[in-house]
Amino acid sequence: MTFAAAIQDLQPSPASPVSPVDLKETARQLDAAYQGLPIEALLEDAVHKLFPGKIALLSSFGTEAAVVLHYLAQVDKSVPVLFLETGKHFMETLMYRDILIDRFGFTDAREIKPDAADLAAQDPNGDLWSKDPNACCRIRKVLPLDRAMQPFDAWFTGRKRFQASTRQAIPLFEASAEGKIKVNPLAYWTPDMIQDAFKRFKLPQHPLFGEGYASIGCQPCTRRVEAGEDARAGRWAGKDKTECGIHLDFQI
Image 1 (cartoon, rainbow, N blue to C red):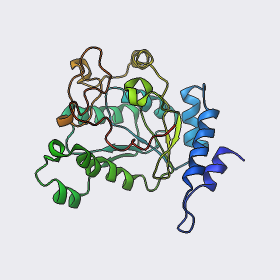
Image 2 (tube, helix red, strand yellow):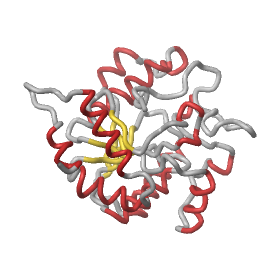
Image 3 (spheres, rainbow, N blue to C red):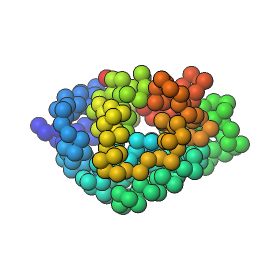
Image 4 (cartoon, helix red, strand yellow):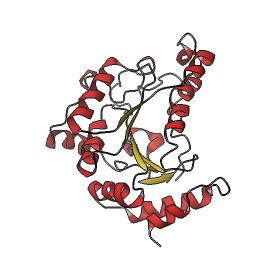
């Protein structure tokens, strides 16, 4: 049986939900099959063979986002590109998003916003980030993404192992708690590989990259990174938090 057929067999129905064990096994098989292959081959197969019409790219349009966007645009510009518009982003990030979408020619760019009722009930003053950042991320990122991902079976991320100690074991393919497959095509890339791609393809950098921001999320919860720190050390600095919540289900 092909991986595509195996994945199709695992699709949920009202009477037969996906088995987490089966989904994890499928992810493990895919991860093993694609080790060592070029990113172009991985993206091509994921889009056209494994998850045809059922995969999207979630992009933060952060400091390294242009790399996976560039490679995906070479494969299929119609793949939906999802952006979680939390209402708390740097203006520079919103500008950068528009620049990259225009440059690469993606035809289905979707702005995913939090539910207005959730904001009114849980964050009426817009300061939940300072009181309970996990709850803020949940209503502004986790729940909106869950809704946006309902039509899809899989999604691309831009995560890499070098970004933080908590990401050092990221595979190419993994199963999520929501019954989706997450594809991490840049998992094994190094900082030098990322910067080489920026130079080779003449990709524009995020406007804040040169100001010391190595990883960029929402403005209130992001600071510059100091020398010797992890790339994500500037995210939720001083708080017991390293992820927004959309990747907390990661298991190798």
